[in-house]
Image (tube, rainbow, N blue to C red):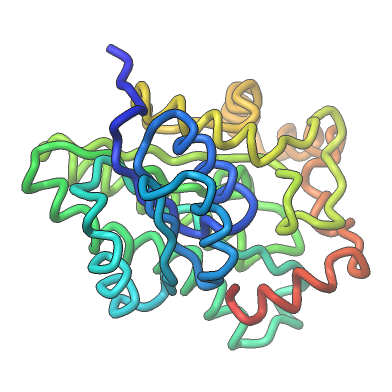
Length: 275
């Protein structure tokens, strides 16, 4: 049975930009009550403004459990929570050997501990009610790692593993867990990143549609675009040499290495601050 979005109470992290913004707006248009969390509280407020009291925005540092407690208190009037969208993430690119130690830690703090902290903050209330849904936005490189983004790939592999473990842990309490794996998405995060051969870049709205689909009918794992999942799983089952040859044909393993550093400069500077 398909669930209705209208009437749901949903938290979206990283909701001021990109996928988070598109998701918050889409769910709000469909009648959900949405709490938009982001470090940029002013920009998050601009997402909430058109929807009146049904959508609220508050500052949230997903890396900080204390910030989560403050956020939850500020938006509690919209709860109890039916769904948590752990979307906040950063994608600095470059050689691991040239990556500052502080940046490596920031990538894991935002991408991995952000999802962990969010789950710890929201899941207990879901357990008390006997229902809920956690959606973790990972990445295609959380299943298929690529060069020039070792820390990012590792962080998204961690999100995939975390999602699978929490799905098993929370299922007896009636809570669903879904992991979303987009390919290159046309947002600031992917500025200067070319599309892999044969794979059309998707938009933030495309990902938001899949998140909506997950909320309506929970699934363990959804890719964006959805057709990529089958070929990827098939390729991963092949011998490494064969899989490598197919990867060379698609150029998928090189796309992050081919990113334009000039086009990415503004984003990279902001990502280093964890925002």
